[in-house]
Length: 289
Image (cartoon, rainbow, N blue to C red; front, side):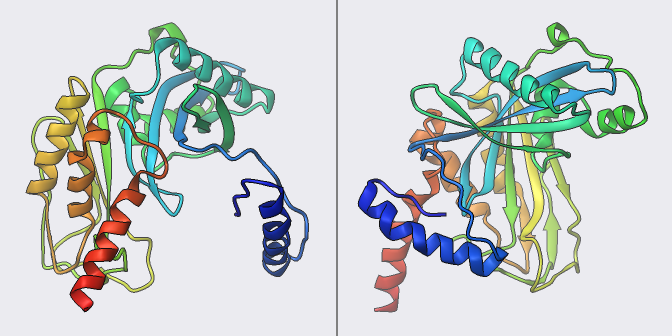
C-alpha cells in the first residue's frame, strides 16, 4: 500500500506499488481508494440464517492496531451515537443480504472524524475479538454459528438485542513490548487473572514452548464492566495480575495504552500506537550511545 497526497506523489508511488504487485501476484492491476486520515476501524457482528433472516449485534471498535493487526478491541465503540449505530448496522445487514450470506460474519468499516463510513471487507467467520460482543450482548457466537450451520432458523429479532455495559479485549502477544520483536521460549510460570467480569482465552501452561515461527497471539484477556471507565479499570487490574514468565509479552504496552488520556477519553484512531514509537526509539538510541 502507498499513500499519495497529491498528483506528484501519485506519479512517483504508483509504479513502485505496481512493480510490487507484479512481483508478488504476477499482475499489474492496481486498486485505488480514498485515504481516510484519523480513521477508526469499526466492525459490526451479524447473524444470518438460511431463510433470509438477519440481525446485527452492535459494533466493535478495533482502532488500536499495529501493522494493520488489531491490538485492543472494545464494544461498544465510544464514537458511535445511537443514530450512527443504527445507520452503520443497517448498511452491514444490507451488505450481507445482497450476497445471500448466512451464519456469523463481520462487516468492517473505516469511520472518519466527520461520521462518514467506508466499507473495508467482510470476514465470513468467527473473529478473534468476538468475545467482547459476547460480553455485552450475552449471545454465545460459537454456539450460534453451529446452530445456524445446522439449519436452525434465527431465534433473535433486532429489537430484542441490546448492549449491556462495556467490554475490552487485550491481545497478549509473545513479543518484546518495546521493539515488537518475537519472543520465543518456554513459559516457566503462567498465572492468568480471574474474578468477576474477567475472561482469559489461552493455550499457555507451565512448560509450554512458544516456537520461533508462530502467530504471536498467545492469550486474549477480555473484561466487562458496567460502563467503559469500569471496564478500563478492570482491564488494568487484570493485566497487572497476569503473570507469564519465561517469555516477553506486550502486557506493559497494554498498560500504557489503557493509561493514555486519549484512550480513556475514547479519542483513538488507527495510528494511535505511533505515539509510542518515537519516544521508545529515542530511548533505545540514547541507551545504545
